[in-house]
Amino acid sequence: KAGVTQTPRYLIKTRGQQVTLSCSPISGHRSVSWYQQTPGQGLQFLFEYFSETQRNKGNFPGRFSGRQFSNSRSEMNVSTLELGDSALYLCASSSQQGAKGYTFGSGTRLTVV
Amino acid sequence: EDQVTQSPEALRLQEGESSSLNCSYTVSGLRGLFWYRQDPGKGPEFLFTLYSAGEEKEKERLKATLTKKESFLHITAPKPEDSATYLCAAQTGGSQGNLIFGKGTKLSVKP
Image: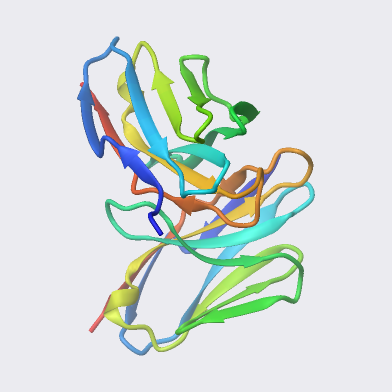
């Protein structure tokens, strides 16, 4: 059974640009959550999507947005990139919203220069 | 405010030297306490979920326990391959089910 797939694995962007990250959940999983991981703050919740609807959102500015498609694949977008957005962005999927088990992908390492 | 605190931040053990990692939580309505292992450059790998005080779960050299205020991850006779960062996360109650993570304990096991 394939795991959670995140693309790309690595990305370098310039301040002010925008970026889109992709996440394909485990087959049959309808919930996708996104987290930002930095050395100083650890893992912080960005948002959760279930059945194409955002169900839950963390404390991040509006520059961070996402969406989920009918096949449960999800994308996360960050506009007007700042140096502080450099982080590992992790996606996790589960079979239900707020479910009992979350499986994480390997993440996308974003570097903003 | 919901909060999860892990200690110690880093732990160095000799192979075979047992120890415990601590995870203290303050959340409104705990739905579940999760333990993950994370290796460098990879996403967190699920280890355990605990749901109620007194619950214990084991997997190989690891055992997780839960009380009303904290969880422990006991490592018995660790091996170098157990070296990783161990993360705990609390799932809050209500309609929002996101995970609140601690900052992790970086474990190094020397042969």
